[in-house]
Image 1 (cartoon, rainbow, N blue to C red):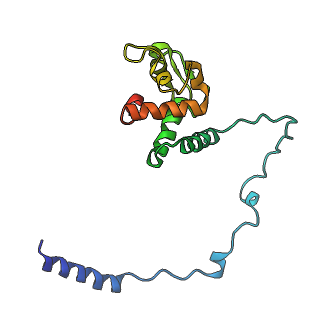
Image 2 (tube, rainbow, N blue to C red; image 1 turned 90 degrees about the horizontal axis):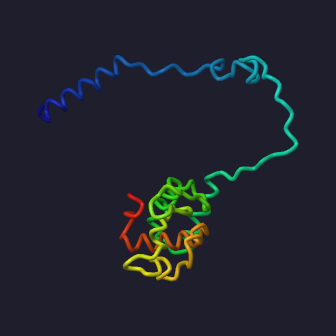
Image 3 (tube, rainbow, N blue to C red; image 1 turned 30 degrees about the vertical axis):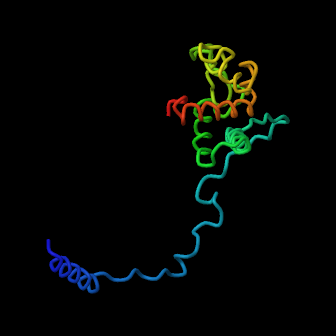
Length: 169
């Protein structure tokens, strides 16, 4: 279709719409009034709500835990452009819970908010004391349950693996 044909069709549609389409009518005063004075006039009256219990159990929402992960990672020195992905990985791996443990992972399990595999803190041929111990990040795998230690260790692993490969991203 040529440019001239498109222009002619557009002009015809514009001219035709001027004569065919009418503007919508202005709303009247009755249109602007609400038909009910309360929400419950339209429906049945609400069912009685039981009295509150005397004790309340507070559950820390995941968003608060993930906010703590975000703030700690920022404090530790994670790159700003990776903070969003870091929180997403923490949410996926542990629901942002620092004491999370998966005993089914190989090498003894995975621990902490970033689910760091014990492979990183066990002796190996290349790291006789363990990779994380050799870098002074921890002395024992159980320290991975500390949020700050876990995020510092995750940052070292992130840098060593040049990105998120250790978390299969």
